Amino acid sequence: MIKIICVGKIKEKFYTEAIKEYLKRLSKYTKVEIIEVPDQVNANTDIILEKEKQLILNRIQDKDYVITLEIEGKPLTSVEFSKMIENTLIKNSNITFIIGGSYGLHDEIKSISNYHLSFSTMTFPHQLFRVILLEQIYRAYKIINNESYHK
Image (cartoon, rainbow, N blue to C red):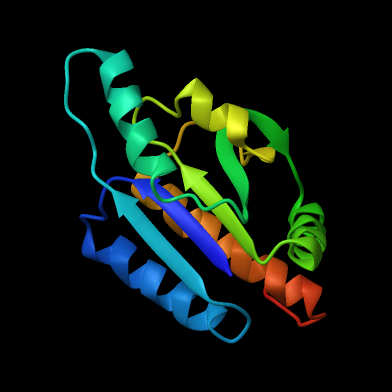
C-alpha cells in the first residue's frame, strides 16, 4: 500500500481531476491513500513546522517505510525510483510519502525518514507536486510490470 501524507488541501479542480485520474490508474496495481493535514497559520515558522510535525506524526504507523520529499534528498531516475519501490515493498507492506508544507518539513520528520528523496532542486507548488508524485508512482508500476508507457 502507498500512503501520501500532505500538508494542505487541493483547491484547483484541474489538480483534483489529475489526482483522480492517477488514483484510478494506480488502483490496478496498489491501494493508494492520500492523507491531508491542514496548513498551519502563524507568523512564526518554527511554530508552523512544530504543529505540522505533530499532525504528520499522528498519521505515521510503526510499520510504514517513510520517504520524505526534500530538496536536499537523493535524486533518482524513474527506473531507479521503480526499483526502490519494488525492493521496499518486498520487505515493507506500506510506503508512506510525506510532502511538507510551504516551509518544508520539521527536522524530526526528516530524522525518522527511511529515505530522503528529491525530485528536483526546484520548488514546486504543493498541489502540483502531488500530481507529479502520483504520476511517477504510476510510471514506476508500469516499469515494474514491464508495461509500455508513453515517453
